[in-house]
Length: 101
Image (cartoon, rainbow, N blue to C red):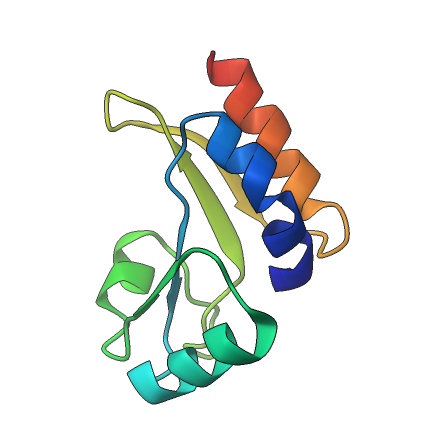
């Protein structure tokens, strides 16, 4: 998922959108990931899984599910992507953002 989103990031930014990732990995693991893949957007660590729990982002085993939430300018969730397709997800995000404008 990260590669498609990284590649799509300039077009996401053109939509006046803020993009960030939340992971249950540690801050150190996130730093390594961001450095290795040259991720241009913020990665946050949620080792307590509180955000994942709040957004129903955990599976039955308690592991984080790959999900994307598009939140509109009013702070309301406008689109939810679950079980994302890693190859096309960047474009899906762009399309969702364009539908808000």
